[in-house]
Length: 304
Image (tube, rainbow, N blue to C red; front, side, top):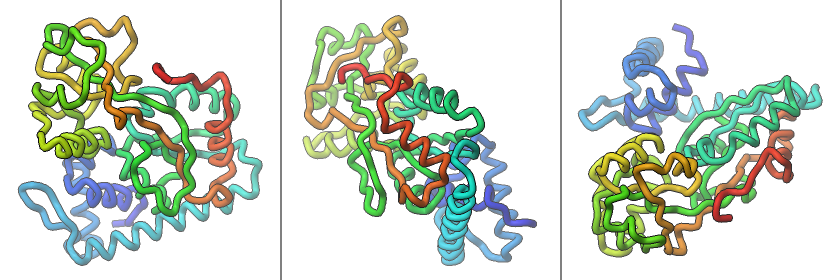
């Protein structure tokens, strides 16, 4: 078997997620395909890379060693792309962007559209990841730049504020909180929640804030998309804590009400991050400049 970069990238994702199914979701392939890739990789190297357990997987000593080599290879590929781009003006090429769910659903689309209109020979490779993983991926050279929530450690990266957002409670129309225009997060803890997946920044933030209140989030259901969250709220399963840019357009609000959170920590900011601007491929440098400069392709978020 030829050990290719795609397989190594999938291996890195499995290590990050500790789970074949979640890694498969990230790469939009079947769980069986992920398992086969890892098994073939183990056969090719003649070692066991992962310990399979009922609750997931974890790397063996050999897996940890391969993890280091895989990260090094990704970094070498990133440097090669950057150095080769020096021979061009940045009007051609590909930009690898990792962004969190909120950025993709809420606001980065118009920025990408206007950039592609300005640079028709540049392609953007966009992947959805959690904010903590995006930061690690940037350090490891898996992406050119990322869009993620502030609040995660960004040591070793250059970061710039990008867009602001506010957390809201999305509640069924017949819910006791539906009669309010604003509410403290503590009040939502008296009711069932429809929560985002455990790898998300918002999930961990709400869990942490509930712990600070010596309470727990009553997460009766966890989902992996904002559409699923809104659908479950409409069905009356529970309320959801979401960013105001992911609740949908006003004409889509049938079946739920958006209630503003009053807590100071509910005001969030998205960041643009990358390792070293001068080391980025020219095309990626042009995209960073595009995101930083005001232009018609970018619009302010509601409530900003």
